Length: 475
Ligand SMILES: Cc1ncc(COP(=O)(O)O)c(C=O)c1O
Image 1: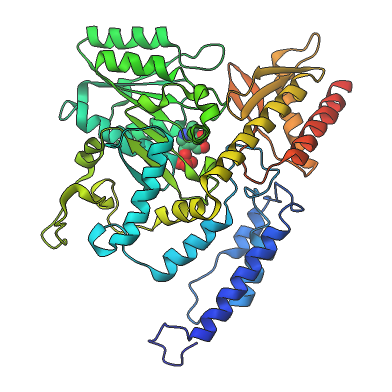
Image 2 (image 1 turned 180 degrees about the vertical axis):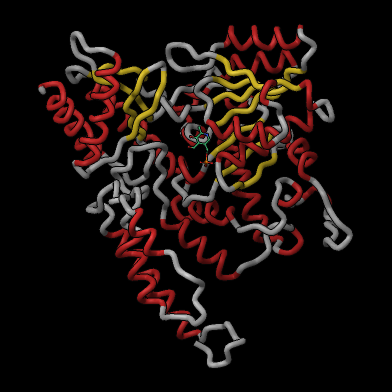
């Protein structure tokens, strides 16, 4: 390090050495990812207590810090990068995403404002436009890279509120289903939608929003003098992977003058594959769409995305300026991120998406997504055929949910057995699966969305579910 304490720059050789050391550790980690358990030992409360520390007054070497990170702390986590990660909603984190983060932070350019890094912002605009084209949104659509699906849902609700309610906040009513992701409820609250103006619509036997119940709720609110303005549907729910009837909901919204937002954080990426588009019919007609590239586009966490059909609505909700800001003399021709989202200074998220698609090409992404769906169909068919398994939600995309039952079993016994199954399968160390409450019972769920998951892991998953469920029932 430099001997002048006020000089924080490292010499080129030192930077190279440190960079090489970090890359070596990351690559070593990824090279052994197949052997690492999908769920590390997270019983770490005592460890965390010992880790609390005061800010260091003097600096240390990089190597011991990397030792602690890679040998002690990183392994003590859910291994979301593992091919055996079938829990919650996986993704994995492709290596080009890591390269993009190093470049973006290394050069640290200002991509919140078009004028300060026009070519870099253009890359981000290109990546957003690719998403737009794959989702079959019109050219007038605009988008935003966000920190995740939650903030994309938030920006969508704010855009709908600004466009349709204006100052009539108190009268506005919003519709979601009992299976809608909880980030939508949180976003509605943050967007100032009052709790007594949120309607939770019941789902059908496939966990999809009931269209008749939705229509009735909208009509009742209108008759009561309220202002129905927004329906949030799901293109793949987190619990069971259900795709709401997007086309019917869209038609209802268009007739009634409501905004239709589709939360596609889990499922929208399957729209990249033309042969899978019928599963998401109606998605391209939505007023806005949440995607979550850190799920279905396999990018590192912190990469969400929003598309808004009428880009002007997104801009109108977020546009603000000040006299000190550089004037954008080109007007609306060039995408200016700070005019479309809440951030001014921001990280360069678009580079991750751009670099990953440039390095792989879209065809390989489509192949990977199609493989995930095939694997989920295969796993679901084989698990459904096991004795004592009831398939509650066959895969609509790449997620399915089931429970254990046997002659004479009570609901409480089935819930307990299903919960135990998850734990026993996960303890075998090849896959991690998690559960959820849906339809009044506890369900085990398998979500195939990590780009690293291939047939061998699915075979292990099926074998371990078969063996452990048999052991539980045989007791
Ligand atoms: C359907 C759905 N919507 C929204 C979210 C929230 O996304 P994020 O965690 O990226 O904020 C999730 C997260 O799992 C999700 O599954």
